Image (cartoon, rainbow, N blue to C red; front, side, top):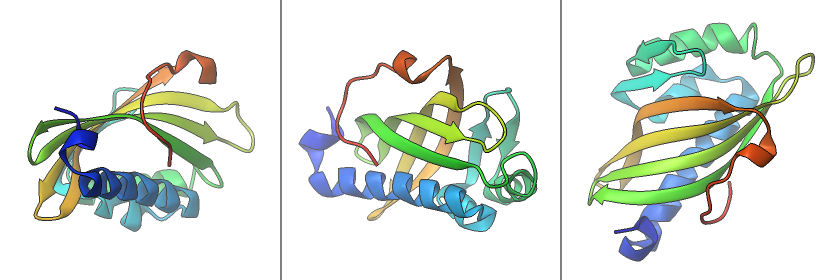
Length: 144
């Protein structure tokens, strides 16, 4: 079952979460970034660092936005959304991260999202770095 077939409003809600993550990143706002995660979320970055919990995610990204990610910008497009259960979605993103003094990074990002009522939260995020934009090949719907 795909999310598109299940409910357009669910797809739009997932898309809004992805857009919110991107906006928070581009503002360097760790607190807003972390608010899109469930309280007990897990985040694994491209280096294999495993961060557990919304508060820890906010703390680590606060430090990163003030250092290595300072003035970085990102954009993401949704490659696929698959409804695993009525309240669980698997989302794949193509992500581009630009630094002012380093090469652009490209990742495929996997999100597991949970719906509580009408709100979706990221419960797990895993980034996998790819060599370049052309290496991110996941067909799917629209972008953020």
